[in-house]
Image (cartoon, rainbow, N blue to C red; front, side, top):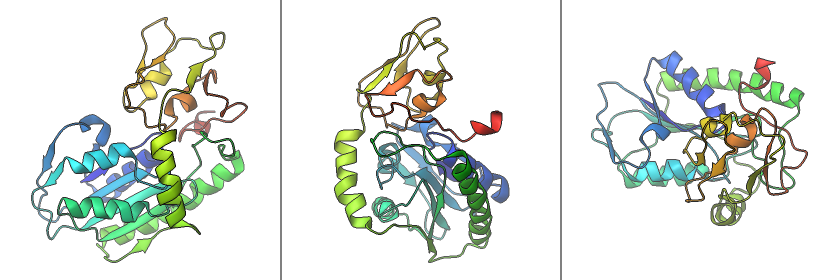
Length: 261
């Protein structure tokens, strides 16, 4: 079983690739978020979790899901986590491991994949260049093959993570600011003369935070569900969505974007 969340597609690619190699089923957290969920693992089944790092922490949707998750027979089953990140993970895995421990699940190994950057919500952050994106994807493909081999062999005690130089500062201080002040849909707005009212932003939103009907402009719900994953921004074919003034003249990225050109 591989339980995953993905915003702009990096983690979906990793989780899908793992599923194809291991033969284990995929479960998308967005399909079951907000409900109490209970699973019983089959004999020999691995338990995998895959998610992107948000503000050097697990995404709120993932943490909230874990709080309502029950694995009936977790003991004795191999459990791993794979994080995707544009740079480093900080203490995200430590936080996630504590969350798992609270529901009686032991984490055996952890891995991180450096993937193309998608967070554009701060003035100094933008998507990667095409060359850097290509390099990251090539390296991630190699790393994922190596991780898959370890997962197939059920290797324990592995922490193949890029934690960065200041994991405590990033995950605790900056991470707290990120959660309390930067996860919001309030700055999102649409440039009316660019918007073609196609609804792709609403379709891309993993938490259904965008109201849209045929021929209308999108509106965000402002109900606290937004994850600031920027899937809406990145999937807009006309680059009509902005996040306050922070995304002006910045690029767009989702996993399949440049492959389609």
